[in-house]
Every structure is written in C-alpha cells, then in structure tokens.
Image (cartoon, rainbow, N blue to C red; front, side, top):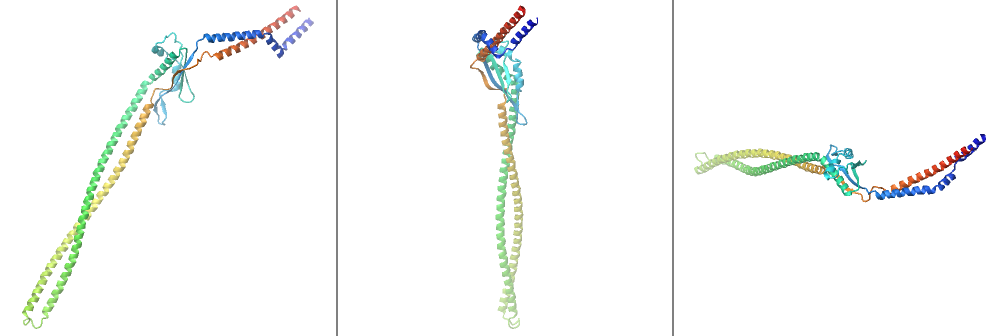
Length: 403
C-alpha cells in the first residue's frame, strides 16, 4: 500500500509541475485542431459577412433655433437640446413618420433614430442605420420637418411679437420726424422774426443817426445864434452908450443922428428878440429830439432783449433737434436689431442636411473577421489544453486502477 501511494504521489508531482516547454509541446501536438477551428471560424465569418446585406448610416446635424435675446444679450433657445434628444430617442415621431411617408408599419416597427448631443455647443446629432439609403434619408428629413413643425406655433407668435414691436418703433420714428419738422418750422419762424427785428433795429439805428446829426447841427446853430445874440446885445449896448455921448444936450443934438441911433437900437432889440425866440425854439426842438433819441435807445434795448431771447430759443431748438436726431438714430438701430433678431428666429436650425454614408457601417468586416479569428484561436487553445488535461487525468486513473 505504501509503495502504491508513493508511486501515485510521484506521478502526481510529475504532472502538477508542467513547464512552458510542455505547454508548447501540447500546442504543437494539437496545432492541426487549433488551425482547423480558426480556419472554419474565419470562413464562417466571411460567409456571414457576404450573406448579410450592407447597412448604411444616414446622419444629420441640427441645433435648436433662437427664440429671442435675454436681458444679458444671450440667445434663448426654442427648446433645450436635451429635451429634443429625449423626444427623438423615445420615438415620439416614429408613427407620424411612417404614416407621412407611407411606409409599412410592420417592416418599420423597430425603426430607431438615435439622437445625441455634443458637450460643446447646442448641437444635436441624428443617425439612422438602414439598408435603403433613400428611405433612410427621407425618414431623417421627415423627422427634422416634424421637429420644426412642433415649434412653428411658438416661432410664429414670437415673429408676430417682434413685427408688432417694429411697427411700434416705426410709429415712434414717424412721430420723431414730425416733431423735428415742427421744430424746423418754429426755427424758420424765429429766424424770420429775428430778421424783422434786425431790420427794425437797423431802421432805428438810421433814425437815431439822423437825430444825432440833427442835434449836432442844432447845437452848432445854437452856438452860432447865441454868439450872434451876444454880439447884437453888445452892439446895442455900445450904440446906447454912443447915443448918450453925443455932444450937447439932448435938445441940441443932431436929430438925424438921434433917429439913426434909435432906429438901429430898435432894430437890434427886435433882432435880439427874434434870435432869442429862435434859440428857444431850437432848444425845445433839441429837447424833443433828445427825448426821441432816448425813446429809440429804449426801443433798441427792447429789440436786443427780444433778439437775445430768440437766440436762446434757437439754441434750445437746436438742442431739441439734436436730441430728436439721436432718438431717430436709436429707433433706426432698434429696428435693425429687431429685424436681425426676427431673421434669427427659427424652430430647428439645420447644420448638415441628411446624408448617407458612402461606406456601409454594418457589418464591420474587419472587426467581425478579427473577432472570429481571436475567439476561434482562444477556443482552439482552450480545447487543446482540455484534451491534454483529459489525457493526463485518464492516465492517472489508469495508474490507480492498475495499482
């Protein structure tokens, strides 16, 4: 018994310590089996590839359109890309697509259009794998059309709102132009009034100049009359003195000389009175002209005040006109901005139209052959080791039985 057990342990230890060389010997021993399994598997994979119809991928790229701009001048999307992705992946439009395109419901009951979003940007990728690229292109195109129809009512309302806003801005723009036209009319009225006042002032200046010239003439005339009056008075005084100094008494004086002196004195006195009247009249006229000059000066000051007031009004009109110009320009910019936003409003923005791939995406020939070859090699090696292991176990059982 002890001998048999020792022999079994020796055999067991011998077979338990299998090195790399023995593994390679086992693979070499079964290489035909491994090669056969590999070749058969690869042949079957190639046959399957040849029998399976090619599947092409129809893809499209789209993005949710802009609805409006928020207060931070950032676009508000018509819907989030995640919602659109979820709606498409849940097959919400499948039945409508099949019905619209007249497809067989049974044949396309498992139709799956895959939607995915990108990390960067609001882009949605659509893909549909099909054997018929024409039908696949129609399916993806119809899906995009239905997506756009989903948001058509919201888009239409938003465009109408923007259009009403543009009409309101245009009305304000027209009111601004009318106000500017009224300011222009007021400006013309003020300019005409200013011209009239300027002409009136020029007339007053001319009248004042004439008065001043008359006053200057009258002043010279008064001086001349005053000097002449003084000379007459001195002459009269001298004549009286000469008359009184005639030789002899008054009774014995020469009557002719007395008469001449008396007549001359009387003439001087009359002329003196006349000169005095002229001087007085001239002085009165001079006072009247001076009063008229003062009145004209006051009227000129009043005109200057009116002119200054009109200058202030003209400056105010200019400032108001400039403000209206700025307002008009702002209205124009607002209309352009509204038009730009209106043009941007859309339900679904198509970045890439539905396009079928040139090469089929299924079956993936190289991958299928590589997987078949790898799996067959793995199975062949496993089977070879299993057969070798089974042979070892069988020999151990035979040894135990013979012992």
